[in-house]
Length: 160
Length: 177
Image (cartoon, rainbow over all chains, first blue to last red; front, side):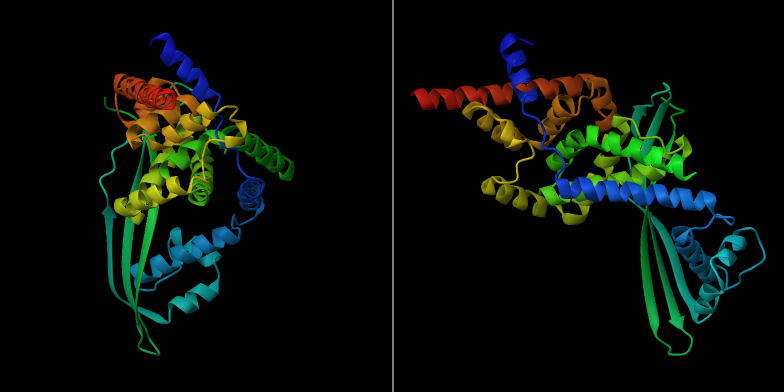
């Protein structure tokens, strides 16, 4: 690279990127506090459930309920659902599953990176779409629920 | 336990304060406006926190943070549609009030022109330039992040600098002419 490009490079480095504004910084710090407190609560809880855990468990309960004929209570997974409380169970019992379909979207090309410990890893995003059609037993209303889950998949790269 | 959480929170906040300008510059190169870029940064924080669970929630390496931001940015771009993004970018540049490099630090007219020209670079060139100059990544790290060879990353970087240099020369000549 010639001197003039090097000088240009140096001038560009002098243009500092804009820092986070006070409000955004405060929002990010609040977010970190929330994430940390969630972790602390999950670790401290005797049954390992925080409100977020409970919400997740409720989602699992919904999924299990829709996918497995509304049966809760016999295997290991259902321990989580049982922890979410009887409320979700009775709520779910009010619906009947008509249809359920799950598919993956996109053709993710993994990014390869080297972790601090020198391990070569790859990371990509999977998008899972679930479409459920349920009918409320009492009212007869049919509801279609489409959920999109983004999974960040990170693994050791095994092939080169 | 609470004390450990406090330490962890402080580590992440320190990491954020150090890394945010770099990550934000990259986010701004991918988003239409400052608000979207900051939203992208917050989404990335959540993803990175979850992702770092298996590493005891330690603050992440910078290349990983860029990688997550890139995926979230791509996803965001897909959702909004490329045309929509292009149109809004033109409006954004015309407005000229939402620069992602700090105009307060510009001490000359040339610096202001340089900033504007960086923002006008084609996306592929601007991305590499942003990651190298303000992201602090090596060409090898940029190559891994963008799934291109480090030679391609270096070429794009050099080409971006040459484009900027040409623009500056042209502007200088037109001023003197």
